[in-house]
Image (cartoon, rainbow, N blue to C red; front, side, top):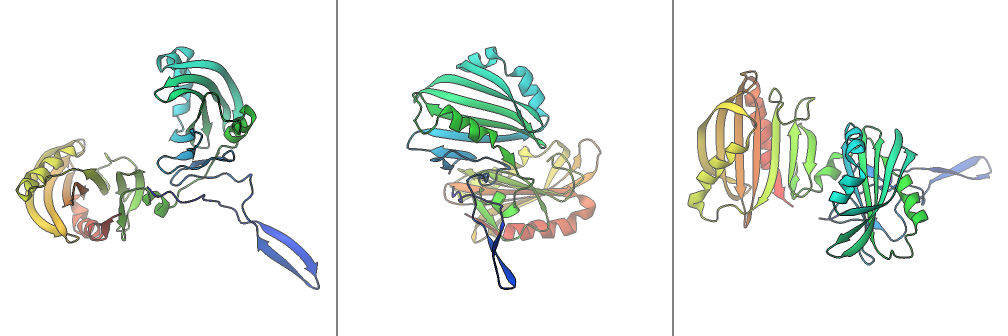
Length: 324
């Protein structure tokens, strides 16, 4: 996965030389105090020198010295639950020995900082675990380094980095989609809800972010390894894949046929169902595009009374889809 360099959101104006009757202003370069946001992450911090944006996870890495910082964003309400369950016994059950635990003023209140030792397959490590409610998120930050730690990463350096934790309100759609294994030239006017890096993207056309919100259109695109190599097995494979939908009732397949999608073999399945809670009639389409050793699955559904327009929009997304 190609991770872009730092996203720095700074435009500073320097007042330059009052010469004659004008003032020249130039954009300033990023400074050492600017937080760095790994690609597709709302969380960022000022990493210690030697740590750069990671290529395979949201965070930072110094591969030479085996030092890593991992950033995990959870819903804001998760902090209270983690605070109650992150006990010494709980850490011990995970193979961690607590060296120090403290609270720090950070984010929306007090953060929890635990410093632990842990034996791993690669040897003994020291791990700093920071849990903090910040803006509308719960941030989990983990810094791990081998024991003995590299001289560049002293306690003071690590603490300074952790205390620089910051958030950004949104992540640009293009940046989020850069971490999935396919490219989209058209999203059909839909709103991106979430991505699973390296796997999938979910879109909708409404205010709710859950896939179970069947009163509004939903479209999910997912890439998976495998798939049938024999063309004769593809129709059944596509029909079986329909079982992974939300809990509809009275689901019935009304059409299933092979087709070319983006110049590759594919299969379309059309179905109808009812919402399990409200009984609203739902229309469903699934396209499976088969490749060599992998396949793309596109599933769209929405209320029947809006289906003609939805189907046209879903098809536009399908036709603009290409493997990355």
